[in-house]
Amino acid sequence: MSESHTPPSGSARLNTGVAHNARVWNYWIGGKDNYEVDQQVGEHVAGMFPIIRDIARADREFLGRAVSYLAGERGVRQFLDIGTGLPTADNTHEIAQRIAPDSRIVYVDNDPIVLAHARTLLTGTRDGVTAYLDADVHDPDAIVERARNTLDFTRPVAVMMLGILNFVLDTEQARDIVRRVMAAVPSGSFLVLTHPTFDDELGGAGQIPAMKFWNENATPPITARGGTDIAAFFGGLELLEPGMVSCGQWHAEAGSGVLVPQFGAVAVKP
Image (cartoon, rainbow, N blue to C red; front, side, top):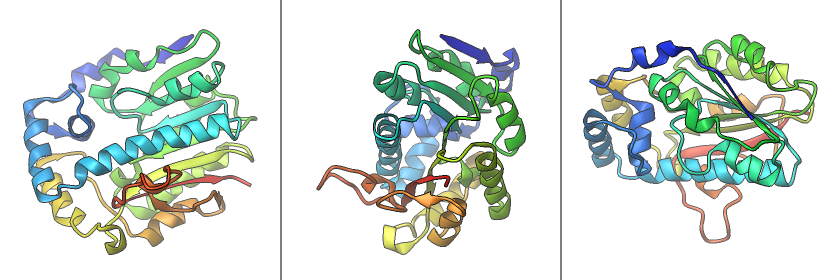
């Protein structure tokens, strides 16, 4: 079963003359849903900060491990994926519904290119539900209100915020967004989060000039944060092992984890 809450206006907002994060990210992970301007900016950023492709792949692989763990070992059957990005292989609903066909997934994004491809995200199992909301992370109350049409907020929800809070430039506003969403879900829910860092211990210093170039040549603007500020997003929650680490190393098989300047963690709401 699938549901769509997508207005037809999304494609009208599409601007192919300026590089856009969803399309450049798609380019870095080997996708086809991008334009020449995205490739040019993507190549320039990769020249300044070669590990960016590793970050993109590690973030995507983190998503797979986190959803598999939550659906398989923690029994989660509801996922609220905020900042979905362009659909690729093994999207959240595909992973979750492979493990539990009755899983319910709500995708949230307001990128017009993602909206144009939303139908790809709405192919789920007969027993489960996948829905897509065209909504902005800066309006968490609206996201929660509309997600209630699909998700049962009396049962645990895994809130996915992978690489999205870095587009909320004000740190206190970003914290408030997390607080508002997590306040709406019950005890036993989870927060799954990744975020780029400039911390030297993860090799993040190169993010700063690369992001400066990005902000001058692409959209939307982005910021990295230190580990202390990223850890604060998990205030009031209990981090699962191994805590907040490079996303490439979270629950990675022995010897296979890659160190990238992108923190990743999963926490449970007590």
